[in-house]
Length: 531
Image (cartoon, rainbow, N blue to C red):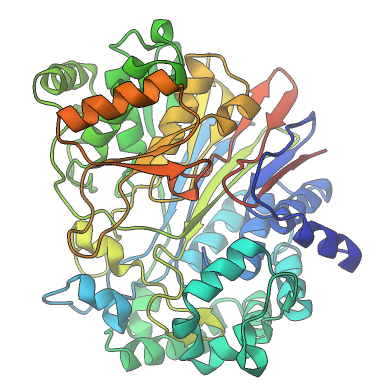
């Protein structure tokens, strides 16, 4: 990537309304313009949707270190246009082989809250199955931006400022984020030499480095913080391919993540219930309190249900009969109380369509608040993704259950929407946007700017409990009546103001005939580009 182009793209990373983009060949949408361009250039060089998504993700390790890390996880939903087959790759974080007795939220700021990472094994697995270009080509822009640097945008700086104590307590963080003793300011250049060297060694040495020096450095740092991970955990980890879940909603089919990533199951469950309502006649949520109330109630019902693990009876949960019984219960009693703690991930989503109409919908993350434990190895923070162990401790070596929901919408067997979202409200975000697109016929640019609800933010004293956060933009009469009904039922509700990142970031592409269309969400600093 040309240095002048990279500088211009870095400066364009900003909040607020974005322009929609249409193209006929390929398209990339995600939360940083530099990552978008890295992916688009790979498409132009003849790469597949998987190649482009992996190049964007590798670039995000560098330009969005507050949201993702090599020490976290990576999941990919892939549509092979040649065969019409969909595959789901789980490269999520796992529990250590050694037990963690008495695990609590207090462990999340220590090495005990560090999970076994899956990011690199998943990158390799996706590249091996669906990639065309070399690993060196996919890592090229990330390495260059780590070494040469890029301009810090206000979002990244805000997270750095909020976590300056965690960054300041470790030599590896100080040398990158606090050179000379103060934070790299907005607009100044952030260079990450250690990260560049790590990515170069992965490029050149692959598993010899990852299972060797990287695993040893990671394990030593984890154990210094009180954790139990050893290089044996790295050797035992394997990225896994699954058949994605499938459901129907009105005249479309939903293809999405498979347990133990259970956001896809939640999404289909919610749509099954909403299908039994007359949502299309009520109108969009910002103009109809009936629609807003139905969406929030159904989302609360599925989101706060027990986690859907690999052993869960998913067939029953996804049945239309169960949805009917669920709706009847909701009408009588309202949404269920929380069944488990729901943690907050720092997360990124990338959606890519290539010229052959292969599709990659990728969520990757360090699965925690940024830099929460102050532990670093080989230039990367150690993930605090053990937060998901609070939903239910996995068996030793098994995956955490995480509510991720990369998805495709098919009509007559052909993809018409590809999407996903990061953030603690990601299921709510995807649900609201799919309803906007499918039920109300909104364009993607109309949908991403529409006001949303989200989930209740974490509160140290009480953890994650049912509740609704609400953006500005709902019709005044809808806002007043919804708040009145919440108060009447004793439901927690908080005002978020306009366009808040807590309500997710819809990374969607619509496919209509031979035209691709996308629009980056105003709630983060992203972009959409096509060619």
